[in-house]
Image (cartoon, rainbow, N blue to C red; front, side):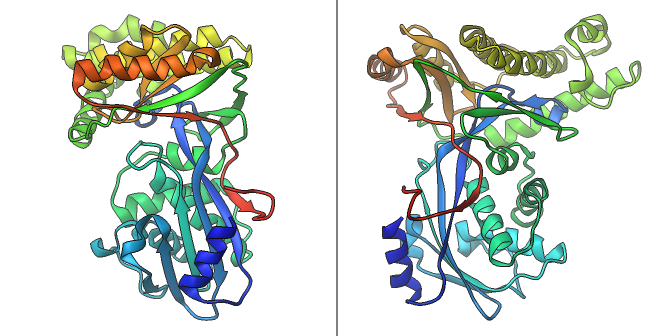
Length: 392
């Protein structure tokens, strides 16, 4: 942290009271493409994320600087005139957060802020939501607003939806804001009811692997899958009193799936229903410390995403299949939107080195791409930190 404080002084000058904040990245352990279908997700916050050093100002100026995008220099705007500007790139995320706080009637002062993120670029661990929550927490603390974290999570989602123009669900912001050390959070995306499950892996670790495949299809296929699920839901609603596919048990779906006339829509709905049930079961298995059963559910999740939802693609399948073939792998699946991005695996510690070497070799032979691996720990959610005791 000392280096961040020194860099802050170089960029913005000496003086004033400096405060430091941290907001993690996140990964979803299971529960993919269930959020917009009214189901459950099961993410956790990570020990890597976004650091922010901030100083309150007496005027309405906002001055943003990122050590990750140092070539862009300081981006300066007035809090009284916040609009999306493409040239501001990454800084639109914190600008959007300030804009939503102001829309909600909160009085916020200007500030200078330096950001530094150690989330691997392009790894799909939600660096945008991480910087949003870091900004929310610093706004809340610098201005003594006493905003509840769940309310900040909702405002951050609004910032991304309304200011940035990305129609994301609430999972990323919720996992980052409400994360808990060594725990995953089971979140009902409809009601925002949530509970924590301790993640006690004993002699195993979470390993994120980046396919390094550009995710060119993800956005268009995402919209396509949403409309397929909406069509299936609409047909089911002609006969059943349900608000979302997440309201259906597996038994109810199997009894009524004949109502869905389009076979593709039926497959999509099947994934949404079965994945929701898997996610609820996975949380129970973790609470019971049954890691092997949890790993099996991860594997089943990937197969469903591959065969019924069809969002994996050649590279993700190749990376997961390479992982499945290795000793010490308890479970492995794609995580995120799909068509590239990352996998998440649980690997016994004594096999960690061999897992990374062998999986990389197998994957490269099949795809020509070299994956990147990150052994991650589950950390706490977004918060103010003491820069003396909480180092990078």
